[in-house]
Image: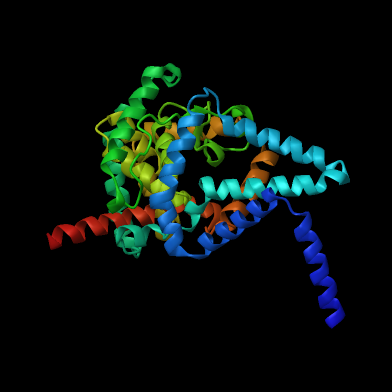
Length: 367
């Protein structure tokens, strides 16, 4: 046993002698990331004090480039690693490179996954989604959606216009600037966020991806195939990620909150319409198929037709194999980053909205 320990110590000394400064730096950063991921206090400090500084610097630099730098970076990294795997002599280089990517990801944005959840950040209490509460919310939601249905008629060509994109950006920037620590989200740290179109839009559509947060250069990107009525809500969702919200259900919640708080009626409609599948799923799952069908019949027919048309639109672009692979990988990715529900976390938006409404009512009673 003693000889074995001596041998291991000798090998460790030899390894340490071979390690260069960059290796010690990498090791130190890996330890730092591990400590922050383990500590809720440090991760909270990271999200509120460190990330806005990192995000403002990275987004300012990447904003100078008109295309999505992160998309190109990821594609080239994949090609480099695949090239290294072909030669055994470069396997160690590939492993070191992946470790640097790992550190960069978490320091640049990924540590936001370990911040306290939205209930702790806002003072909300998890709402018990009973049948009566859900039914009352669902029909109140449907009334708002029906009332705004005329506002969704944005000409499809406007999606490509800079005027439409500026209109959405300005409307949502104004709303997010009014939010803050009370709502559990960072205030905008970049007055001119540079949303970019995905470089590989056709592949993204095949995989069912409509937007993404590119952490390495603090960019948020949108699929170029997004339809006009979906553009504001998806923009607001990815912008929430840009502001440090990692959880998908929380990003959906902030998208809903931002869009429905806007004075722009087309933006407001997009916020309501975007959570329609989640509301319907909640009603069908908790209240049953009969009540689910009644709610569908209560919603204006043109909205239901729009939802069906959207489904056909995206299915026509989707690759079943690529979509399934993306779902599997992304589910593992989320679960590996403290999102235990995986992809199901997207549907948590209804419970968050109900909890938020209860918080507003409680504050009114106490004021």
